[in-house]
Length: 174
Image (tube, rainbow, N blue to C red; front, side, top):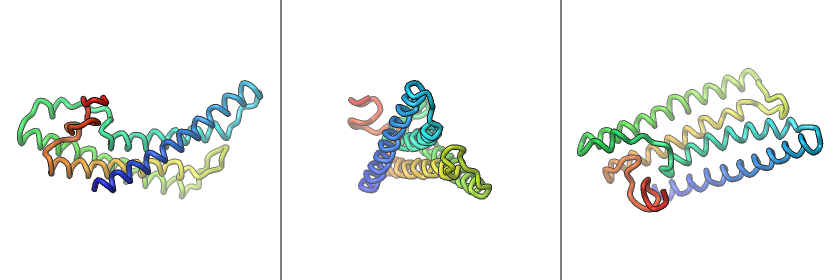
């Protein structure tokens, strides 16, 4: 499982880095073309918006996988024993249910409806379904990590934000 998680981490990291690099180039070109050339580029403006969507959604999934997400961990910290275990399991399952219902199921419905209507972006003439596919892809990433967290909980008894080590919340890198 650790090798698969490392592979998913590496793939997400590479996609996010590449998309962010292109996003930065688009924004720089947009600023240059608007203020130096006097004619703003509509293509780079639209591309930057779409890349930002992908970076934000995939970055959210990656951040969850690295246990670096924003978390309110009041319940796990004030409970102990079996209640703490159940609270941690409920939190992980809530994340997984959200990923499945809202992001994967809802995202696939959004993508399919958008593709059926033939909606395309104004400047790039790109199918909007290709932009929206970021939602179910990020949902799959979140579901993958939630499954790993549930296995960790079963195996070690540690919840989503209770992992010890250098990358754990509150650890040396926090």
